[in-house]
Image (cartoon, rainbow, N blue to C red):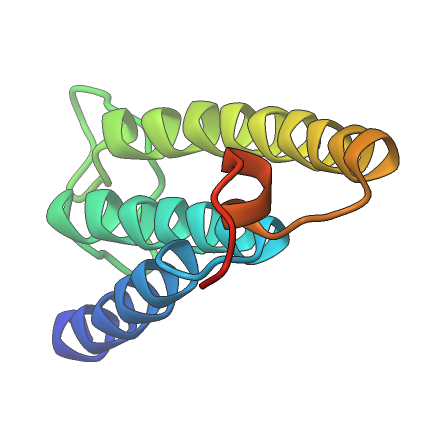
Length: 112
């Protein structure tokens, strides 16, 4: 199971980096979101994937999942959603004012 998730993490990182390196502002925003989802999966995989065990710790529990990675991922998902929403609004506003979402034109670099 960890091998399959590791391959999925690699695919998400590849797509995220490819989109971040593009010139379109929306691609960069979606790339950062996909990259953060890859990081979430990486953290949860590093914490250990266990089936059927609740994230509770008691003295009599035979098996349990570590609740720390799950709480970190939940917090990171909320932060990622807020940052993505903020960046989308910022991109919309810059497109509305400047009329472009090309990074070279936003930087003031002319195409040659």
